[in-house]
Image 1: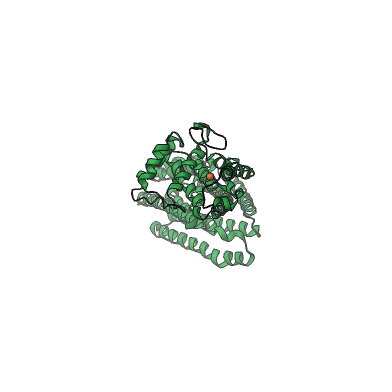
Image 2 (image 1 turned 90 degrees about the vertical axis):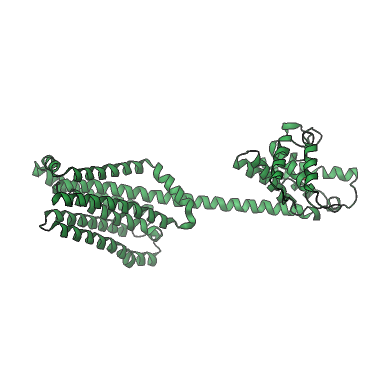
Length: 455
Ligand SMILES: [Fe+2]
């Protein structure tokens, strides 16, 4: 009968352990919400690479496994355990009081630390809550141990389990009836991650009960006290680390959000600039954005890194920014340009370069503006660069620019059919364009049989 209870309690311990893991998962998930999956990923990454957490998890696993092993091995090992711990009663009493005092001090210290980290307005409330959890846990464990001493062990066991459940609900209820109204009254930041405070301690009540049920048959009180002491340390270290991580992650998450906002703003400003340039010429509406998109597609096709592809996109957006300095009459001239007018047009790469070089944090942005009219054979402008002397982003933008020119309507013609565009690109590969970029463009066109890729 005793062995059966022991095995049953062991199994119960395992079930409770699984329950705790599920509860932990749910609490973490709820803490972050669906829209903050990145925070969750960040949390998991931080959590499992944290040496303290790894150590604690390992410790907890070994601890539970050891206890289960004891349950399974049976009563004979218990006798040996008792020999080790009960031969000196004085040692036990001194140890008990010493450990109890140390434990209490440690708990208050940790609770205070936590209150400080969380900027709690009432640190004493945090301390009180933690001491309360601790009392609950000890109470819960004691009741489980009683099951072993009783004449009706099964009844006591079930009673203990029921008490655990009631206690857990009691903690949650306490939170909603006392802590939350207090938090709302005082705008206490405690409210944001309440599950971290409620669920782990409630879960640990179950863990304690499970462990106690599994081991109470053959461990004396002082051994249980010792286990209780060390498990409490482990648990508080665990929650401590948990709180630091949550706090850091919230900070990192906020920083990431702020960075995203700045990035979105930069892109929007750049796109607005691109629209401004395009607005000068009624026939090039959307040209810069399309060139930017094509350039990025080419960069991706050529196997550039995501960062490089993004940079090419921005350079594409702003490649014609120098046209701001070219008078509208020249840009929109219905007649063939004179040599003087053409000379003015040819200043736009240099002007663009000068404008973009002003952006000190991103000096690379000016590359596309300056060299997108260079040719592979060195016959381009403004610097007559040849071949791969022209930076790759500029060679890419050059192809994207010409592609968009051919596939957009002009005052004097509609956009060209795809075959003609393809022939033209092939014809100019190696003279005007980098053959590698042309190859990438042709492969993009092959994937566009319905010719969707035009203005
Ligand atoms: Fe241009």
